[in-house]
Image (cartoon, rainbow, N blue to C red; front, side):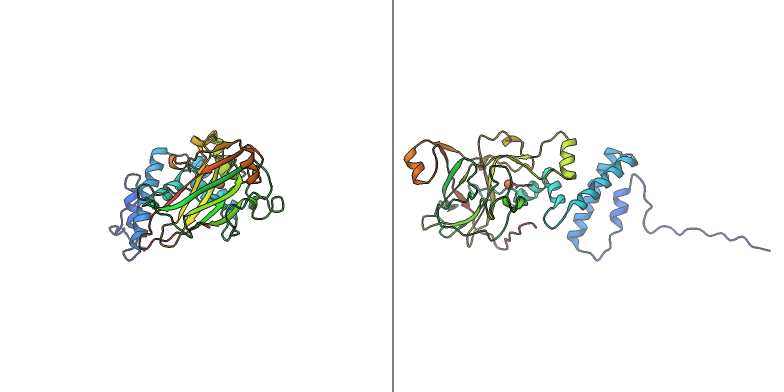
Length: 310
Ligand code: BEZ
Ligand code: FE
């Protein structure tokens, strides 16, 4: 004769998952002995992720499409292509992180996005060197000073410059087509804080848009173009290094940069110079473009450390 046995569940230590209590249930699973910052970060991410899902109410197909998209983003990543950072860029997250981490005193040059095309250890050049090695584009001379927030010149500051050529590509995107180190170089300020170099007028160009992020932009009715700019990292001993751009004021994409990098304070004046003698002195054809641009560095705060992205 078999006896009937009744087994019942113990009172749960953790509440079971429901649509209503989902955030609390998931976050309650974190252990007690964990990194408090990780607890804060993951707790907040779960809270906002669940809120988004509750607002969107995705179908299973939509949720799977999202998973597939993120998988494609991952598959696109290589040592030299970081599609997740590109996604962060076009969603404005990179600029938000940049802004939060570079709240500088008034008057100091503002930061903007580094972008994926910075190459460390570019050639160190004498003042005035022309970094445009392929001779393409309209000639440009950039002159200015590096100052501290009291307006005093900073001697020995490094002005690291890079930009695309007039076809809209960085040298590293066209190895074997453009000369190595085309449109890159590092200049050093003199005792008056002055630097200058010759180059070509920057033009707009698309961010790499042959992957899932480019496809997303297309689906959203967005273009991939960056407003015409020159990149800079300006650094000096004792100062907070600034990662920044100057933008060309006549670019049609100035108010719709694909990665939200434009700031009002970074838009330069470009003067068209018609003077034949001055052009000859610079070994330029006339007319050429001239920009005057000062960088203002804030003093380094204790513990500041700039970590360029991979
Ligand atoms: C760039 O300025 O080179 C850039 C910035 C963000 C994403 C892609 C390119
Ligand atoms: Fe760029």
